[in-house]
Amino acid sequence: MSAAGYPERPLPWFQRACLLVRALEPAFEVYRDLLGFELAHVGEDGPDAYSYEIFRLPRGVSTRFATLSSEAQLRTLALIEVPGDVLPAPAIPTAATVIQVASVAATLERARELGLACCEPRHHPAPPNGPARSEAAFYDHDGHPVVIYALLDTAA
Image (cartoon, rainbow, N blue to C red):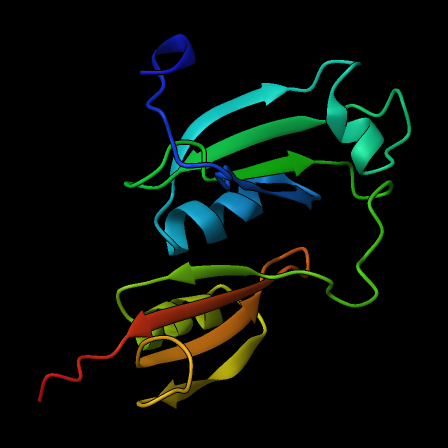
């Protein structure tokens, strides 16, 4: 065990992605309810939080944050709620979250039911890099692209 009872990990270790959202509740619809992450914590950012500096947020803007965990890793994803009038709509995506799911078709169907813009699935039975897979993408309520994929059974 390393510091504070956390297991030692190989370095470098990717801890989490952090997304700015206009409201936590619609984001929970996507990341908790649709994709299956578990809500670990919701709190308020203090005045010295790094989020003000790294995301260039105006000091004094009230922000809340949430962390979500997967079965395999604690606090896999962080969401920072920034009031809608402060957070501009993204001009073009510059990053995407990539998440393995049990079924691309079922996840995409549920994303469409939530009114999310979706990209059609693609199937890669023998890709030159990585395992055989199906993949698709959608945009969350704040315009963040989410790529989903499921591994294909090639044992047949």
